[in-house]
Length: 145
Image (tube, rainbow, N blue to C red):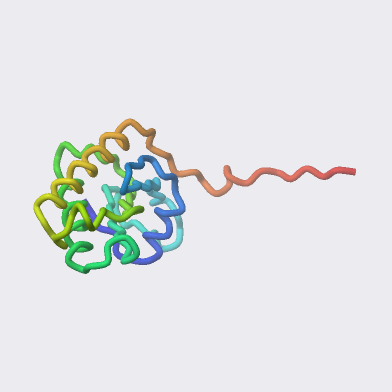
């Protein structure tokens, strides 16, 4: 499994489809386009993964890092079933600070892990997109008289 590193890689994946959602997470997927003549964003045909945990939803750095660690650990498991494509797991809602008082507790990590397993199970049922050649995506425009 490769990790997304550049802003361009994250933007390309986020422009793709959202294939699964849970109460706190969304999974975005983008097909790999290795045939482009320019410098490709993704150098190998492998599973690519990025984690996006905004400060808006997880104020403490300890919490953000714990959530990212859970994302990478759960996704790297052999039974995760992620297809060969680029993926971004995005935190889209915060965890309740009244329920999870500690910034990094076992209870929070367990809740994150359970929800990530649910997210990956939903994503496994979603179809994998195929890369569309640039010439096939353009359509002739019709003129009206």
